[in-house]
Picture 1: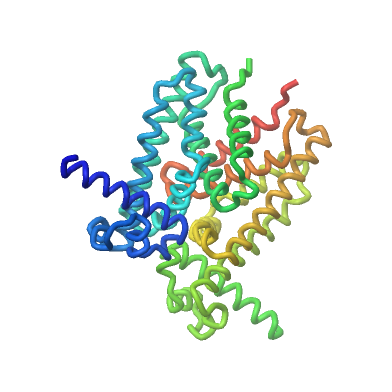
Picture 2: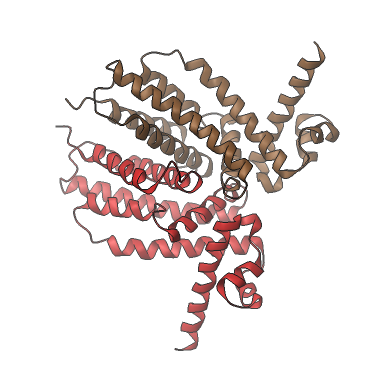
Length: 199
Length: 199
């Protein structure tokens, strides 16, 4: 393995550990030494990735956005688009342990975007990208005749994004009520109502 | 004015100031002296309400839940229930400055519920109450024949609650995209799809 690949592997290892620690202890409770312990690496190595609380959060959010991006790439070619949308939407919900940790980090990130301009810009860029992708999917499924109902693709993209974010937050904060099975049923009902014909 | 009324007035004054300061500076940036300045009272008085960061957040969340409760009481008797639901849903969205500050405090509160059992219990109690109220409204509007579509009231209550929370968060974090007019349109579309007849 060449040096660059080693560095990338270690970076991922630290990112994975960081996501678990922030999910478990919160942003306030995340300590460098715990991240190093969790990753099985030295504190010095962890420090080389982030020197401040802001760095730590940026690194964690970049790691979860990277992960999401890779998962999204896998379903881009699914047809019909309604099914692609359902699969994409499920990717954004904490239906497994990794996603649960990521959703907890996302929850810690949101309030920081209100007071930190750099975090606000990261948030805006990620959500704008998501909105544009979902908007295109709704518009394309109208064009392909999959979606016969009259919809405003941009507004539907915003509403679906809001619904998924709220649902994801509740799945993390109240998992005994908002469990995986309920979340899948809510998502199915939500998409069914958009896609059912009104003519 | 009797002593008790004075105390209540001062408490509300401090609560209002606290909501504004947390909304503006975040939970991390909220200082006792700023809250006192904002409220036009002494630091000592503010200290009598909260002695720690946890106390401060609990006080802020209690204040916003109190405010919401009072607003909700005003629309309980509205008929048809579909219109009551729309009005209740709008009350939960940051459509004015006060609600915007409250939504920012709510956003700061959510991640803390993951690591603080007392905050988790406050969150669960507030959301359980909301879910029960919305569940009853959906069930009643089925019984009254306002809602002819077959729905699961408990699941609809969860989905609407998730949608409103996500939408509220985006209205605070990305107000240039999720503006008041878009939010009202999304909410109208959302309720229309539930209430439109399928028979």
